[in-house]
Image (tube, rainbow over all chains, first blue to last red):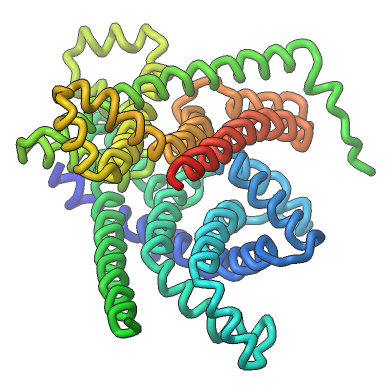
Length: 234
Length: 232
């Protein structure tokens, strides 16, 4: 197993770069980060639409969220694979295809987290903001969201972990990420599939485990911080 | 050239038969994996509650592995990796069987047993210890306290998250196509490559997934509402 690491660690980390396209763990992390950054505004919009008092905003948001949550990520990936090129009118890389599918998928889940966060803020906060003369957007932007997003930080880290794991489906359309790198190494060695895929599992484990620990730590800190605030208020 | 929406082709003869067998395989995989996951989850929860630290650590390690490694990679590891560890004769035997389905079933079942055991555990932990003490004070033994007092309440609490896991399990059976299990997603892709009717081919499969998923979601919403009313 150590020999596999010694000979292939560079392929696992950055793919064939600089002799070919960049790949491996680097692309996995880039995909996950870009996915999070791009899905955040979409998720925020969906969450606010779902909480809005206007039916024409709320219903489409509910429909989108339920539809996306009801379909396997793989199905969304195939939709993106065949339809993004038609919509944009040009050939699109596997990377872009996967990113589109991930952003759509994650937006729906992240929006539910954000909604729960907003709903968890006591109504008195909105009322207080209103009585200070703030309108809807300043209230959201200055009062509600900073508190809601802070409280939702642990859930968002967990969602990020699930995003990192989701990037592995790119393997099915041959996106050049770490699962694909492992597939290439396995094809070269032929006789050591358990070691190669075990190594792949280990890599994901280390990355994701560290992040879930971080989520737990944040949860505890936010918990004590809140308890402190309540004690001060009382 | 205007693309025309033509479901008739993909829903006729051979292609319809593919959808039907794909759907049956998906359902078989989902139901079998669910049963495996649930039974194993109950076992894991019971082991975890035993007053024996190493057992607790072993279950915790099992859960952490399955939660932090992508399911696709667990499936690949089972399908490509595990047979390599077996003796030659066993490997030959497995290769003659329908091993794709079997390994997908094991991988999905084990993975979701980890998630479900966490749901069950938090359900049990949410029941105050005084409930158990009260049951004992009424002269119920350990098993009868569990059966009549703790478990009915704990299952109420764990119900909605368990249904949510069921939804995830159902959707994730689609990953089995990566090792060649001929389930719904696999068949949709096959039909697409035979007919070139991309939109229609995926439309049908998506509609089938969505129908079942929405059913599970409605069930989940219903269960969540019921458990809420009882808590008040």
